Image (spheres, rainbow, N blue to C red):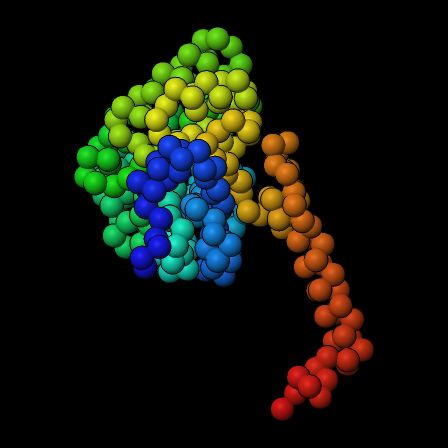
Length: 266
Ligand code: KIV
């Protein structure tokens, strides 16, 4: 695997002003596609809670679910950096819990890094994980695991006070050794400021075009998911309709005994 992307290569991209492209995958088949399309980072996001498991949000996602999907995606990615999300309550209880679970996503899951959300300005558990040699991508701004505390899907950093808090937390994440951060749903001006002041890459989602890279949920951008898609998502295709059309044709062919025909029979 000589062309494998590592966290250090992601930092280098910022230095070279090359935009970082990151997308989500929860299964082997989609991960192979993303890897072959030269996506830099494949994220096993805990958004799989909504899109794979049908939960209302990411809170119910378990560590075992993340490990299972991480194993599948890691096997597919020959080139892309594989980052796995630490789900809610898999790292907040103790340093031991955070280190063990992050370590397992690397050791058993095959990921090369983990992503951890920051609630408030508490970054202690992230430092614990970095200290055992696991690369961490911090996630701040709108953090879906704190949805009840944040009062729903809301843009963060709307007041000067909030902006300062987010800025200081981003700086703190850089200081403790995160190799990158994801900045979600914040005003473009704040994202631009953080991107220009930090040496580590800032990967935006709903944070404007000035970030060092962009991340989206693949189900959203392909139109596989058409339900409650956030405003910041651009849908590049309508995969949902393509699948519906194929299923309709299949139903008709089976009803009319057109399928299986001679070509598809033994
Ligand atoms: O869970 C996820 O898919 C994410 C991305 C939206 C950044 O955290």
